[in-house]
Length: 459
Ligand code: G6P
Image (cartoon, rainbow, N blue to C red; front, top):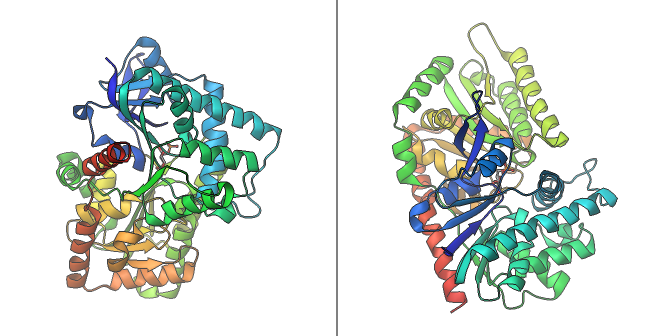
């Protein structure tokens, strides 16, 4: 049966891992996009079109295994790798997060052109699948920078559809975006403008996109642009974080921390998350505010991400090296200053959220950052939030967080000190206000708002 509501994204709600006995284990996908969209569930009657990402996923497609409401596309592995690793996660991710800084520079050569062709083919595969699955006049919500061209391609195939696109990342300012080859930059913008309506997480990213269109194309044409600040799912998080598996992990963490204070961070290990500078700031805290030595533990969960790319692997190694260095420099027989965990474990993340005295969220740039929103919601006794002014969440949480310039290590160390020193009553008050602001637009509402706005835009 043709679908009335469709969602499209590279990463889908689940992924499959092969077990030793040949069966497939289904696991929830990671990252902000999936956390946000998962709340919709099959009940909404939506069809979620996504990519098969690993061997397990491809095997599931071959065996015809799927979840209700999910269709995985088995795009040829080479095309997918070039589009996902080459264009989306190297070039576009780096442009939107302003990550290119000498000596890390973009290379637009023949290899890039080959990848760009793959990116087009990958977008076309999505457009064709969506065109085949959508009912007459259906609403299609395409997600993120992997699928920038798909709206325009789908518009050509199916002019009857209502097409929306939502960006979970920032959008680069025009001066930076123009680093892309001219024809690529223009094609990306025109692809987006193939949608009836574009959504962004904050006004700042929406304005940057409009600024790019203004500069490169002379305007945004008839496409409407809106802002929907995805919030945390309070109901789900509160229930999930009180289950026995989380209690168990909390007890284990408590044993490691003792009665010391805990500075918690939870991230995919990713250059934009600024984990390395966060560790430098923690080291500066121990150096400049010696009263905290032996009194605080930095619980850092840094889950490996996009390990096919050398730059991510090197960054992951740098995080481990630095944590080790701090432990060697300051650690004592009964105190480990940094507890680093790299194995993704959602229950343990929630346990850390519950006991955090301070949450450190210091990205160089981030579309929203849901961790900043989730911690105050889950926290047992209220938590102080050290927050980068370059995270989308800053627009809603800035007032009650201790805010930092993410590049400034000294200032971040001072912010950690301020957060650790915050009187308990003030901390609890602020945390309560943070939780209220963080849950203003829960995922299900966020999704429905976009759907309604798309319908209104095309009425
Ligand atoms: C960000 C992106 C998502 C992506 C997630 C995880 O949140 O906006 O589109 O799914 O990172 O990254 P990955 O490359 O593992 O899907």
